[in-house]
Image (cartoon, rainbow, N blue to C red; front, side, top):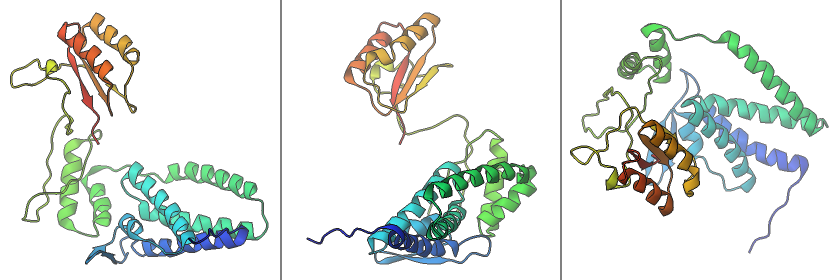
Length: 280
């Protein structure tokens, strides 16, 4: 069994930075309207892409320190992709340059806490200045310009982007899914309301023909964590009972005790409603 290698100071930083720079350069090659296509090996097949997030996703190193560098860059790209849906390439480039600058300052003997403090002040300054450069998207012409760059000049995609965003207005949500069509055609489907792949957990919640649970203007409890205790929802159930509000509770999971309590309230017709597993 091989022993662990322990690195300190400049040697450790330089080793990790090497992974950041190698990964960053590969991602940066795709940047902007003049970016280049990258070929990625995936098993017996190859992927051609100009998406920076896809590139960083497939990068791997044998050296552990380079892996740490790549993982740091991937974490930044992943967060940008999660929050904004785009901009992962820009974030990779900025992260790479910031790491290079920080390492250079540390190599000059500047204290790491001073570097961190300086970066925080610079971030606040940049974020404040960015507001003055902000431009609102107004009309199809602006949409066209943004979509044209994002799609690498594919006018068919541009038309669909304009159609999608023009149809939903300022408060709609656009999601992208893989089509099952063999014709290779991109379609825009506009729907009102919200659809997801989960349904009510108990047949006791059925209140309409066709085994449906139809609720008009219900109160909705959306929980990030599992609901295991009756006391967590009892005040809300009593509130809905008193005011005759339907109730929908959405959570990752529910305890048997909590579901039994809720179903009992539905059976007694104290409330109408249902419990649903959170999508995803």
